Length: 459
Image (tube, rainbow, N blue to C red):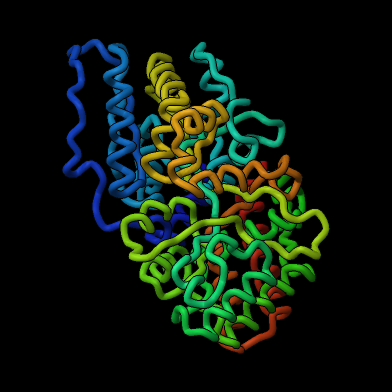
């Protein structure tokens, strides 16, 4: 095992159980259509994933559809726990020389996975060697860029991508005397709406957020075309440094601290902990993953809508496109892996990039349609017309051509850096330090993490 893989294990230990965790394994209870059996004739591919139910069941259905679509290959999907647990299992299997052909990995592990040279096969190389046609230009730039090398070559296969948006309670807006068809577009408007909601007691909480660093640090930086880190947010080298104590970043944390103090903002906790505050009706406005749409549909007992993340309208150039979250598929190597097995992986990836599959996944899950042909099909089917607001994530991701600050992030040990920001922000919300002190400390500590990653993985 090389040093890069050891780095992966360290990262995963830090975030174990934190991301996208669920309570039920996917696959249990799923009844796929029957697969045409041709004993001994198919090349088998092992596919380990980390999506819990019901998303995992839908993903398994796609694998079975691939198996039914031809007679040469078979994909065996297997749920291995949440993303960190799935990757730990894959690393252990790699060390034993028996890694799965495909493993699903969350987006914040991208830099760490890219550093694990020898353990992965880049998808551009996979398609070339397999002789399978593939056009990466069909993917949305914000998606393609996140999973590509600085020179534009795709390294992992995009699949379940999301982006943070604003959900708001239309009933609470009406009770507060606000126009439910005119949700806030700027931070000034959001703060005014949250203040009105509390003054009229239209909801117990005006505004909250889930995935705080993703929604209000990483995407906040992109939307305001402000660097999160040097070197194109890490795309241009491991010697990148955090730039998160800029005047704009400090100002934004101060805004959140002021709203927290005046009672218009409730800090809902780390990662997805804040999600529950919106469908329960407690908070009238939330910044959360577009992938929460299915949960809101299922649980909210009120009229609701979605809109873009807000921006400070005095920041030149804002708003720009947001950046993605979610996960991608990585091709793992193994000493005994054959060319036919890699070709089977390439054929499966080609299958899931079809517009029918992209559109189906979007409409059944709420994740973003990640290709232009998929988006076109969704429109042709009338799904967005029948489901107002379902197109907001796509429109926000494509609102502008990605800049050096909106391509995405490529920071080593990013999950550990997120935890650092949680710690410093929480001290600030408790009144233990100023916004400047919090952002200075988080930036310094984040840079220490980056230096450790650089020392462990630099060529």
